[in-house]
Length: 253
Image (cartoon, rainbow, N blue to C red; front, side, top):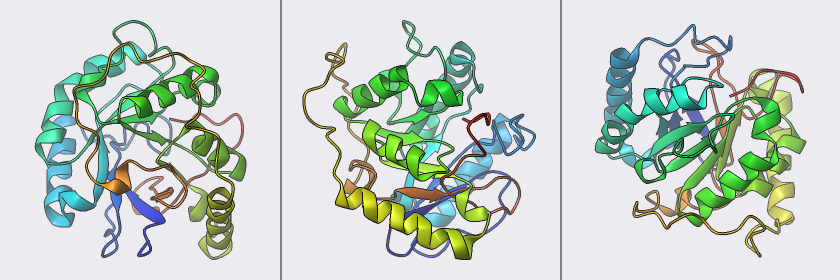
């Protein structure tokens, strides 16, 4: 973490301290380790926690905070998130918006209101062509992109190919001494094999350029390898973790 290659994902259910100098991101626990949002404390309590977290660790180290969403529900996520995107930005940190299955329907992505596109939704959707197109459009609009629940070398490679700036999962939670060297090796492999992203975009141009400034700081705008590529996240209270999945059929953000 001190080298900036691995950051720390924190949630309202966490309870443990973010390491000194580490970059961090703030999830909201609407999905949670059980996939049912058992650790979601409610909107007001969540925002009070977010404010305390930013005050304690500083806005400059915060990659983003995810607005409350409705997992797997694009229309519900829009309703849930819109109220909170501006307050997140008012804390001096980038606001992340959870992209769910079906969010590519008209007017379901409030592009000008968020800074980071968080690829959530089902596994099949998140790894599919629509999510890829939206990730590339987000980058073209000057926004960051994050992929949730990335727990394998293959999925980390997909996140890099999409142009993601960061990813999270639970890989380090299940044997950190054994899995940390593997994870760092994955990142080294990706650093040594640049993707072709950045050439001709096969999906056309964005509907309109965003008037929103890009996320602050160089560390928020580069490709995943060599940046805060892996986010150590939390499966539940005091459960440290990182980019991984729980199997090909796991329900994921």
